[in-house]
Image (cartoon, rainbow, N blue to C red; front, side, top):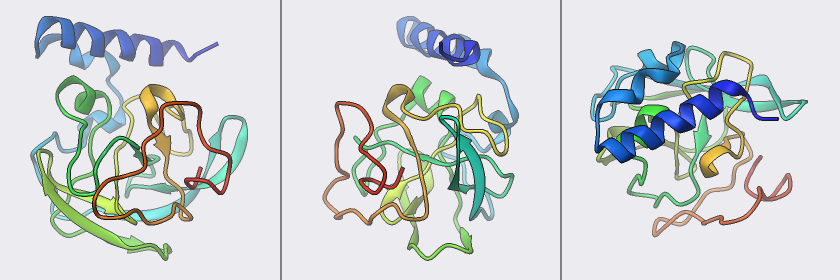
Amino acid sequence: MRNPRIIIAGLAVAAVAAGGGVAAASAGSSPASSAPSAGQSAAAATVRTAPAAVEGKTETVLVNSRGLPLYFYPPDMAAKSLVTGGLARLWPPLVSAAPTAAGVTGKLTVVKDVNGDQVAYNGHLLYTFTSDHAGQVTGQGFQNFFVATPRIPPIASASAPTSTGPAAPAGGLGY
């Protein structure tokens, strides 16, 4: 059974999409909702690793400076986010003009796109999920978002690998 907050948040996105915009996006309020909104840049963001429960197992995942798990969206292109509007309100992009890495070996970059200065790890644009709390991953596989891990392989600059089915096995895309 899915987490009720995920279902409610999904309904909020549907309501925003159906209504053309603004009203219902606040239905999934959590600590992540205080992240900078799309198009704004934070002064600095830190990407680090931390243990988190992912589908009943403890995994090492990438987190932001507040300990919230970070996700990637396989349909994104390396230089362009496809996460906008209501989807970006549910999955806030990690934005920073000057991100830092702590304890990770992958490449951290900034991509200037529709969301502002969006942070990418090994070419994958990063997002949080409004229903998550530090140490808890609740968005794995929801709406085709997957938790980012330190071993997520780099992507080519043209586009990210796309996924239309279930998550790849461990070692595939880093989750």
